[in-house]
Each structure stands twice: as structure tokens, then as C-alpha cells.
Image 1 (cartoon, rainbow, N blue to C red):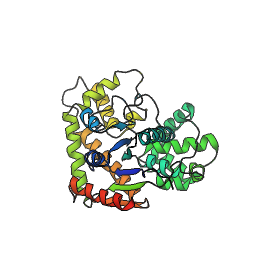
Image 2: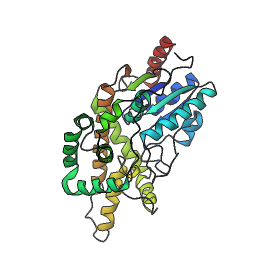
Image 3: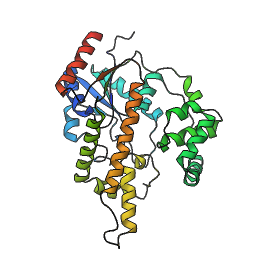
Image 4: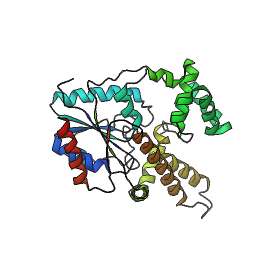
Length: 321
């Protein structure tokens, strides 16, 4: 067992209140925060990701935010490399490591290890996108079910990024991705201490998601999206632009461009409803993943104040010390 302090995972679905709790507990623990979020890594994706503000980041040092451009592809393997370096840096300063986010694949990869899968292949990805246009993502999911039932059970047909990656790996290697991932070793020197914000009342979370998205729109989310679209390096099929919210905003702006000369033909609320529905589906997948993880301390975020949530964490941390 390492003499180092255990790494703390603070996980949860989108809009569960991770940011407020992480800032509060980090101050008490003298911790630095490592973001575990596949969208926060991208520069320029600020409003639509509910990225912690500069003021919030000034309160507690944050890592793995704004580390790549929107046209780059950021992977779980790259996250593990970046996270391990950040962990070493934080520990060298004698600080506690607090990992916060909702990208469960990244948490899993760091805790259990990650198979060294082949790099992305533009030709294979383009072919898969063309197939998706012909037969739909449901059709591609059926292909995955035939070659890799384990991955198909884990990946939803409405999760095109992960579905595409699983099929890509098989086509490049001839081996199911789940088999490649089975032979892994954790890169961590000891098990992490895991917490998850999980609401008892799903309606509470749905309301928070709708409220937060409304605030994003009022805060200039569409303007942010328009600015991103002006960059010729950015297109709709990039992982950054397929993030929940950004995909629906891109589609809405496409609709506006097509119908710009026909007043009143676009329902301005429709894209928001689609984005909120997609965010709810994301939250459902996150919660399902969390409930399947072992040794997680669940915190009822809809029943406890931030101060009470912090007390729960502190009690468990003290007991583990």
C-alpha cells in the first residue's frame, strides 16, 4: 500500500451539483481538482458545458480543462496519461487529489486500466458514418451485438461516438473491443475512494437539467456555437460538436440557415427541448453506470445540502485515513 493519500473520485450525473461540492470539499482537504469530463478539455466550449468559471477555478487549482482544441480528438487513453501526470504533480506539492466529473469511462479507465486500442482511423470512421446514414445507428448497434455482445450491452444505440469506436476497433483489429479491454492493469498505486452524487427523485434532476439549459441559452450558448462554426477546422462530426447540447445547437443553426428567408417556420423552443431530452438521456446513462460500480459511497444530492454532502464525504475520508 502506498503512503500517499488515496485519490478521491467525486462522480455524478450532469447537473447533480458536483462543482459546488467539489469546491467546498477541496478547500477543506487542501486539494487540487482534476476534471474528469470529455467536453471540458476543449477550449471554447464554455457555456454549453457549464465549465467552471475563471473565478471558481481561481479558488481551487483545476487540471485538464482547456487543454486541446475543438477539432482535436481526445481519448480515454490520452486522459489516463494526462491524469497520471497531473496526479504526480499534485502529490509533489503535498496536496490531495480530487477527481471530479461525469465521464464514467474515464473514471473506469483510470481505476481499472485501459487496453491500448488502435488509434482512430479516418477512413474507417468515414465508412461507419456513411453506413449510419444508410441504415441508422440502430443498424450499426445490431452489427455490434453480433460481433461483441458485451460491448453492445454497455453501449446505447443513441451513443454514436462510443458505438462508432467499438466497431472501428473491431474492423481495425478483428478482435472485439471488450476482449481487448479485459486484459488490463490499474495504473493507480492504490484503490481510489469513490463518492457519487445520486438523486433519489429523478424529477428533481430533470428540473435542474431544464433550468440549467435555460440559463445556458440566456447566457449566450447559441452565440458561442455560432462562433465555433466560423472556424473552418470545426465540423459537425467532431467529438466536441457531438457533445450533448452542442449537437442540437448545431442542427438548430443549420435549420435557421436553410429557413432564413421564411419567417416563422422554425420553432425556437424545439431545439432546446431536444437538447434537454438528450441531456436527460445522458444523465440516465451516467446513473446506470454509477449504480453498477463497486465500492461507491452514494450521496443523495436532492435530499442533502452541500454542507451535509460535505459532511458525508469528510466522515468517510476520516474513517479511511
